[in-house]
Length: 337
Image (tube, rainbow, N blue to C red; front, side):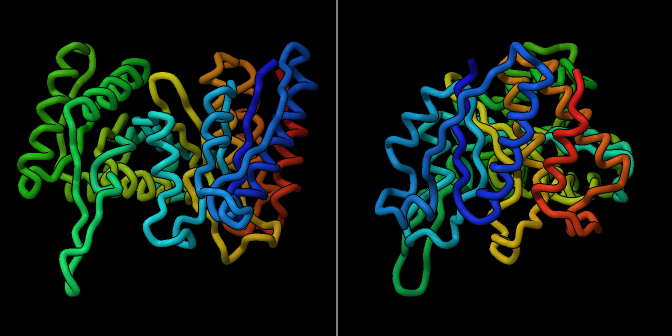
């Protein structure tokens, strides 16, 4: 029995997590030995409306006790000033590595058919360290934090991942501007890379990498980046394959992990039942890989690929008119061992 904690959060997170749960429930009929026990906890704006903290202590403890954790989205913009939701949750779980695979699917019109790249993003430091303060009535300051430990941890994840792929890591920096912080990052990455002689390490200025990702996307295998750079580059890559509605992610630490779609709460379509659930469903597949349930994870991935290849049903972001539940049902119907 796998204990799965669902954190729907806010906006379309509620809808896509429900869709992912429906697929996981259907999966039990395909793999008789696989059983899930679902529970749900509040997080984000919904938790605040219930009189709780944005990241309730009970939710964090539940995430630590669960075998797998699936998060929808948190409405960071709507949280009270000075309140951190997602960043705080990541730090409390020690989730230092954000894994964002970007893959082109047959049947989906996109700018780069065949693209298969993974962005590995440091997830607790950098410009998202959460350290901000006002410098007076006319200014404010955000602190970019880079540590040797943080860089080493995420670099090791990137090299281990690349070793099982096409064996290339591209480390991204802005050394001309961030001489100390990106200097430390690159120094640490090179030290880690020395333990992986079978993996090629190259470096790219963030500006050049963004351009090359558009012009020569097939060159890249695993892109390793600090927090903000990785966040931006993964969205650029997602745009090459059809959008963030197809982009799942994993947040990994030494002891705990959780899985989520890359997209946010999408308040413009929240509650309309037309959000694309495929990123959340693919995030559930990543969760199953993490739980050593590879056959079940691959069954979800094949079902998603089959639905996309057939061309229907599709939600409006992919040019269709289907609902969230219709797409989830189509994926569930195509599950096979």
